[in-house]
Image 1 (cartoon, helix red, strand yellow):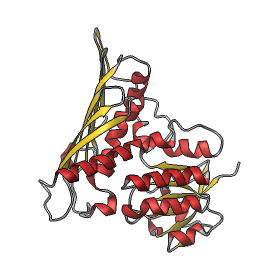
Image 2 (cartoon, rainbow, N blue to C red):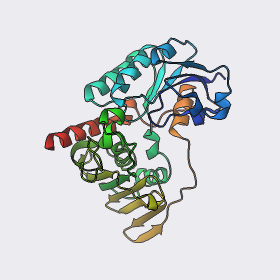
Image 3 (spheres, rainbow, N blue to C red):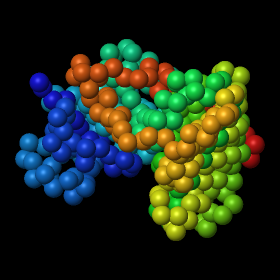
Length: 323
């Protein structure tokens, strides 16, 4: 079986180079705007990998089937992903994949028009444990009707966080996307309307970096959801991402707390205790590569995969309008 040939563009985000060492379905063949020293040692020593200064130079390489984008500026990434698709390459883009709805619509249209796959990085956060097990509980109907979802995503502050949201997308778009994926993918209902407030309070420097946001949502099934995101996770917590998710239904609730280290399922007449999270399942990248090599089917349609980003674009606009 021929492996998918991957090109890596940029390092502004969670680039996939480490996953490509002896991957059964993919091989790295090129980089662009990429520091070679950030490649794992086996790839640094690979003389077949070509290194380019620009994305367009790499797109001209007919060996490249698939481009993983961690663009130097997130504001430019949607247009760069569209260039990849129009050049006949599959594209995989760091969150947020777009910063405006017209860009997102153009990206979806380019994927359909080109016949090439497009996916957004970190969609897999909602398919990893313990969220994989929580999703199974919801899908089985164990909670009855899901009425309310509460989610949290908290990271530490550090001085390297960009002051300019165009670099990484800002708090709502690049952190909130995890929490909205928990709401939609685990909670089982899409967000229909969203409202947001954000603050710079606690920012030790001048600039546009927002430190905290609160969002309220109406779900398509008639339920409601709330999300908080911030850069206020103390280093002493010991886990980089302080995550929490609770899904409340008519028959009980399921929760994950303390950065995903604790779970609990409680029904009307029974406390079932922790969930079984022993099965890690495939990574989202592995799902994508399997689907592109005819060995699997993606769990979400493209429009559903990027729907959390769409709603967060609206949340960001709402927050900015409120001052």
